[in-house]
Structure formats: C-alpha cells, structure tokens
Length: 404
Ligand code: DNO
Ligand code: MN
Image 1: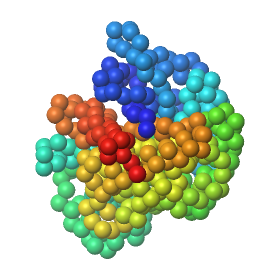
Image 2: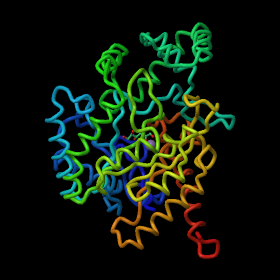
Image 3: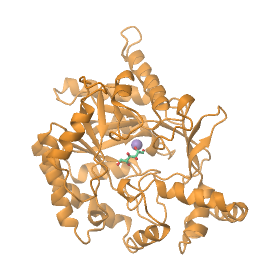
C-alpha cells in the first residue's frame, strides 16, 4: 500500500515540507484552476510537478505527483450535449500529457452537478474537535424550502418531510444562509461561486435524463477513453457518489457494488478501474467494503480510506465523518483485504502491486481548529488518520501476527 496525500497546490495550508514530515510517499493533486473541459498542458503539469518536488528551502523533497484527483469530466460529457465530443478529445489529450509527465493513476467522478455534499462543514464533536456532517432533515429543508425544488418532498420519507418543515420554521436566517453555502460548497472546483439560481439551472438540465441513460453515457465515455488509457499504460479510477444515493432529483450511478460491477464488465479492460472510497460507499449499510475489495479488488487502482458513522438505519440517513478507525467500516478487515489483493497481484506478476491510498478526510483537531483549511483536509486530522492506518498495515504485515 502506497501512502499518499492530497495536495491542493501552492496555496494549500499544508506545505510540501509538512507532507515530508507526515511520512507521505507520494502526492495526489489536480490542476483545479484549469476550467473543466480544457486540456491540461504539459507546461501546467510540469509546473505542479516542480512545486511538489521542492521543499521550501529549495532542496529536493523526494516526493512526486503520482495520482491525479480529479481530472474533471464536464457536465456536457455527462449529458452528451453541447461540446461533449470536444471535451472527450481534450480529456484524451490530457491523458497523453499526463503519461508523458510520468503520471499513471487518474481519478475522476461521474456525479451530475454535485461532487460531495454535506450540511455541516465544521460540526462540533463531544471532544471539541469538528468534522463534516450530512443531516438528512437539514438537507430536506434546503431542498424543499431554500432551493424550492418542485416535487422535492416526494424524495424523502413523510417523517423527514414533516421534521424538515418544523426545523426550517425554527431556523434563523443566519443558519439558512450557512446551510445553503455548505451544500453548495461541495460543488466541483471551478463551480464554487455558484448561486442558487445556477444550481437550479444546472439541475433543470438533467430533467428527463434517467439513471439508466446516465449510466449509458458513462459507458460511452469509458469506451472512448479506456482503450487509449490502456495503450498508454494508465489506470483510470472512478470515485463513488458521495453520499451514495440520489440528491436534488439528480440521477446517480456509482453508489453500490452492483454499479461498479456493471461498469467494470461493460468496459472490461484493466485501465477501467475503481477509486474505492470507504467513506463515500460506507454511508450505505448494504455496501460491504471488505467484501467489495475482495470481489472487485483487481480493478481497484486507488483507495480513499476514511470512516463515517451512520446515525440511523435508513438508506438515506444522516451521517458524520468519524475517526478513521471509529465508524461503521471495519478498517482492519478492509486493509487486510487490500493486502490480500496485493499478494494476489504479486503472485500474478502484475507491475501495479502497491495500491496508492490516502487518508481521505480528517477531523479538525488541535491547532487545525479555526485554521480554515479546505473542509475535510486539515493537516493534523489527516496525519492522525494516516498514522492509524499505517499502524494497521504494519501490524497486519508483521511476521509474528502476520496476515493469514
Ligand atoms: C470525497 C472526496 C471527493 C473526491 C472527488 C473525486 O470523498 O474524496 O471530493 O475528491 O469526488 O472526484
Ligand atoms: Mn473520497
């Protein structure tokens, strides 16, 4: 397992020096400033690589950009409208440029309009630390009363609708504004300045596009890009829907093991792979993370290891981002499954034995509180997560206690 860390570029509060001290082996990054649909040029890629390669005193960091997260897929490609064909061609040129720069693992996602969605970005834990949280009642209140989406109330249970009505009536204007900002915050990079009207317009463009059609569009996209990726020796990996159920009336097609199995079979080549995000998939009780790793592991090219705690047994439930070993996913069993997969790869003579992983999000604790890092990306909380995960890996691989 290769220990990686997400770095948002030179303006990230966590420096290259910090990553070195955290014991990170490789870096995950993206060119967030390049508009979606445009080509990632060799010059831009090289510039980011050189920033990762240097400590603040100019000496070599020994770190390299190993995983792209994310090479964004445009809304046009997801809808097969407008400039979608040109965007696919540009995505392919970016793949070539990344290969030429020696970067081989490329993560992306296929969620219409939204990326991750939370109602609280700094929810206070009993410890005094904070974490991100998704509250289904708050979310329903946003959807029904703030966004005012027609038929929104049909997407929630009658109890949730009832409670959302009461909660919204009691909400201060301040909280209403904050809730709207928090939900919109999870929109992908270049869309951060979206207004509610923009969100309404983007949602309306998906009207009449059922999930099966979106799945078809994903398969069409992969049929175009995976053969090239295979030829270039690249590994593409699709991040799951976060959370793994439909929101705002938008279709979602990467939420379950079946969704992944369908896509893996539809374009059945190794370059078509998975970003196994235990925090995203783990929101659903019917996603068995160690089992998914056992069954689909040969196509897992990248791992996000984090944990969530479900707050009710419902499918569409409230949840918060727990400590890495503290939520509903059995992290020891999941890591054991990853190590088993790596043994299988070694026995099969594969070249990609070591699977890159990162401690996906972390809680805000100690000096990170109030430091205003990118939500989910505090240095200390992630370092704590990485250290805990590293402890499990070390223990499972120890010859005395060893993995059987
Ligand atoms: C949530 C995060 C996501 C992820 C993108 C990948 O679990 O990992 O923001 O980076 O969805 O495309
Ligand atoms: Mn993730």
